Length: 263
Image (cartoon, rainbow, N blue to C red; front, side, top):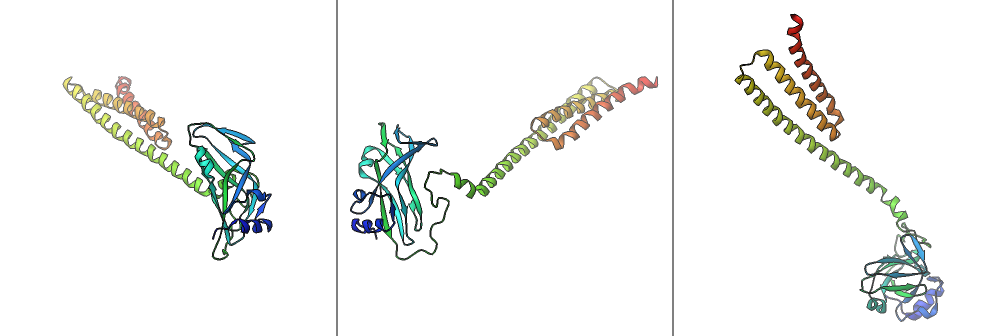
């Protein structure tokens, strides 16, 4: 059941509305008066909204809803025709707060908002019974605009979970890059060894030349893979690639210099 004018007047006098003006009572609601506007975390006594711009509005009145009543905020018809749209919560039983709502200019013209202006009407609806759990949420007793400050604490756990999922996606991305690198390295190695050995066979190279060229090729491939691996930050795997590169170059040097040292 929606309260009518005489019922609102009685309830307002009993504490339903704080700082209210009897002249703002309508036949089925109460026209709330703007106290200040919030835009970019600044409080303003007036503001001009261009097309698509929004601002929060704080009212002069405070509401103190009993446990069997809710408050519903609706945009005044005159403001709708002016080109404003409005977003507001349903104020729940037991909620004691200043009323806050957001208006957006959806017209093609600039709209001026002024202190004391009436932009919305609050409707008071009686419930079938008292609720078991009156409102005690993040915005209880909000007499000054707090933005999303209290929300941050409530959803901190969800924020951490999202951050973990983001890190997991980054790890998956790096893993995909690593697998692609391995596949490319295998193909490069096979192609390099194949072409090197075919060239050596064509030149009738001896065994030492085969070993030297193959070790050098393996060292170059390992060195390139280590550099690419470092670029995508896989530190755990880099040591093996650097070791393979060093050992390959060392083996090639040993095969080349050992005969000279023996002579």
